[in-house]
Every structure is written in structure tokens, then in C-alpha cells.
Amino acid sequence: MIHASGYADDEYSRQAIFQEGVCDPKHYLRIVCCGSDSYITHSAHLHRPRGRLDWQLILMAEGRGDYLLDGKMFRAKKGDWILLPPGILNDYTYRQANQPEVFWIHFTGHGVEEVLRSAGLWGRSHFYSGMHPEFSVILNGIIRELQMKRPYYPLRGMADFLGLTALLARRAAEAQTGNCEAGGHDFIKVMARMQTLYNTDTSVCEYAREFGLSTNRFIHNFRQYTGVSPRRYITGIRMDKARYLLLNTTLPAGEIARVTGYENVFYFSRIFKKYSGQAPLAFRQSFGHSLAP
Image 1 (cartoon, one colour):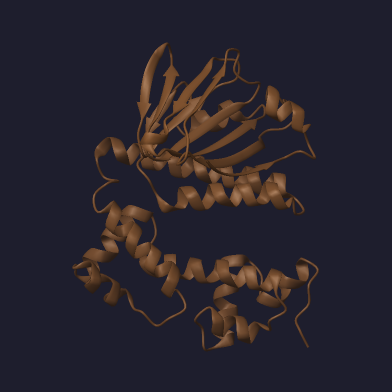
Image 2 (tube, one colour):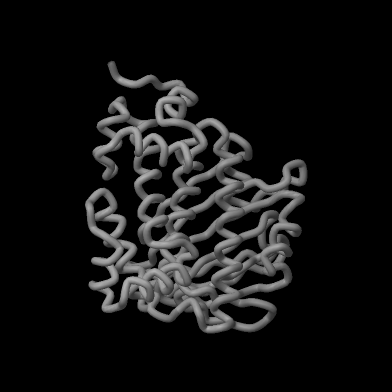
């Protein structure tokens, strides 16, 4: 089994998290723990007769898993989500032959009902959204926040979880109309290429040509699948990389501009401020860093 996880163990005892979960009505929304598991070498069965004190949301990222829900066995496939409320029987099995890969997140707080109701997920034990690259990006981001425990990580975890539920709700609604799967596999591939080529001069026209579509049709379909235009998606990748370099290196702004695909540092600074609310230098200084001399 391949396992990765993060825990809010400075907020709650590790024993409570592992044994029975956490009920925290003091906060609006708190992430208790988050992780991923790949059952590629052996099977696993989990049985909690009384469930947990917190909520659990599970994404079947690959393969299949068997869950006992509402007294009936449900076989989850790739793109299915399972929602387990506090205090109910937890009984599910992952068989190695099915090569299951799952993400899971436990959460609590007095605002859970409001969040789930606003996303149309309240009262549902399972739903289908299909897969989207952002699901793993958000969930892995929450895992990292819980592992690193940087300042205000509970707030960042809450914000990421709200973004996850919003994306999940949108994709589940689109799945019901059949809109989210068309061309999905190919779009995942082209988005992966954008993640690799984000700092090059590769144009949207070139991506469209590789995709076998006119530029206008490619932009329309890409926006329908991701919710943003191809150019905005690429710019988002560049800004994420720039923020990382500003906070984790001493590279000057001009070098970061070049590394992220901008020849003109002033244009880079203008775009960065538009996306981040601060100029690059101010953004770095706000986290206690200074530019290299």
C-alpha cells in the first residue's frame, strides 16, 4: 500500500484522530486529517460499528471499492464520492485485484451542514462527478498544509475544502447532464502538457492543433471542461510557480519572471499583482522574506 497523510495533531490528539475522530462544535469548519491510499499490493477491510465523531469524504480516484451504505452494498468506481456522516456504521473493502486508489478527508465543525447544503450534498451518501485534475491538486495541497503546519494552515485548509466542495458540486451537476465526461481524458492530457510547458511560448493555437480542433472550438470546450480559458489556466500555473519561488527561494523578481515565462519583469509584476493582490516584492516581504541582494 502507498500511503500519504497529514493530521491536525496540534489541535487534536493523535489518539482521538485515529480511534474515534473529532467533534469540534467551537469552529465553523476544521479539517481533522486528509490522506491518500493506493492498494496495489494487498487488500484492506475497514469496519467501525459506531463510525466516527467527524465527517468523512472519500474520492475513488482509480479502481473500485465496496461500501455498505444505507444497508446496501455500493460498488464505487473511478469518479465516485462517498460521504459518511458522524455516528453511522463504516464498513468498506478495497480489493488489491481492483487496484483501488482513494483520497479521504475528515472534517468537523458547526458549519458542516451549511456547507454541504449549499453544495447540494446534504443527505446524500454517494454521488458521481467524474475525475478532474483539480481534485488531486486540492487534496494533495490540504495534505501538505497538514504536514507542514505553516502559519494559519487551518484557515488555508478550510478555504481549500470549500473550493473542493464547490468544484465537486459543479462537476456532479454537470455529470447529471452528461457534460463533464466528453473529451475529459484528452483534456487531462492537454492540461498535463500545459503544466510542463507553462513557461514556453506554446500558443493556444498550437494546443488546439494538437487537439484536432479549431482554436475557437478548443477554447470553448476547454472552458466548459475546466471553467476557465486556456490562457487563464496557463497564467494560473505561472502565478502558482511564481508564488512558490518567492516564498521558498531568494531569486530576484526578474529571474522569477524569466523562469515562469515572462521576459518583461514589469509585465510580470503587473500580472502577479492582479492575481495575488500584491506586487512580487510586497508579497515576499509580507511573509518575512527579502529579495536577494
